[in-house]
Length: 446
Image (cartoon, rainbow, N blue to C red; front, side, top):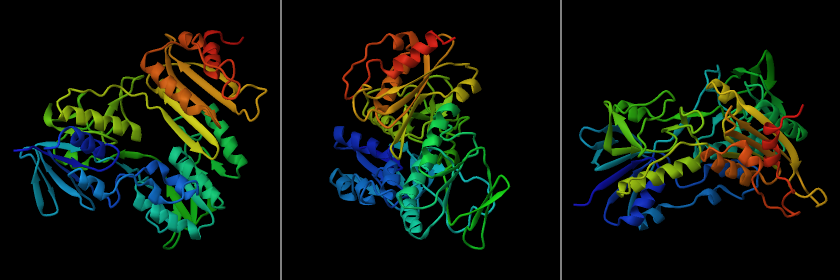
């Protein structure tokens, strides 16, 4: 008799498990259950549909039901799993109870809803799904002055999308700079200056204390001021969606994410369970710099975890290692990249970093259309690279990906400073800003 693989969640972690297992095993029965109507789409593209850079939401949908049906994967959408019974290897959804031989929990994350009075008013939105995107898309057609609470990557990408619609946009951020999880303040201020040049109103060190209105939001109150608004997008982060797992007795850690072993098997009653896995935004991972538990909300991490789970289901004994979380956001023409830890996060964990900064050009100075590029590298007291931040209108991704690899190899700034880099006037300068920033750490200016 063939085994039955059940996957809860059809996002960037759950669907890769199903697809990879099916490619290697044609006999196993696979069922994927999701409470969403839409699946197999790219949520990262939503702001760019709203801005008009991508023509329609349909472009974001990678696969349809027919694709999975042809793979002999039973995909059940618009259906919530209500209970996991690990002792009896079964799950419950609606009135249906199905047995599993292998279970994968890929339940993702849910938006954080801060305790702000008025947050339940009409006109207040969260962005966690394509369904949410449709609602926001409809709402902005009659909006004039939207407000975004939270200046993270999604918040700023959405703010720029609203700006492209000709709207007057205000962003409120409680920290003292934008993109606080990706950048230090000095680098965040470069982004703020760019956004201000686009006529976006940025309020940092500002706390939204109330949303005001009769039935629909009309004002937002922050730091004693009252600003008119007709649409509010709350974008202050996400937390692991683990209630189903917790109710089943599965253990979670300090971050709120599901605890797993290196093979991504879950833990219950003090032991890891052989046939139950978890992957994606609901899972706790290990930070490669601090060696502490962390949550990665990156789709790239979710996919890699999904492949690890699939490999283990297929008997390959694969492991998922520590993460450096290379991240990039594109706001207007500006690319903002970060990998490793920021200075603030490093200090929180008792690491007092040494920093080196450089400003250069993405092309030879005499070549047309070269853009300014800003680089910051952080090292620990042993001069190992622990973080890098890069801002420019081009050339950011490659540098962040390279530094992610070097951080994983415990590379020192001496090695970065003396590394060989390629050069051609149309695409680079003779000395790469990364090596220049590393040299600033080795040879600090007087």
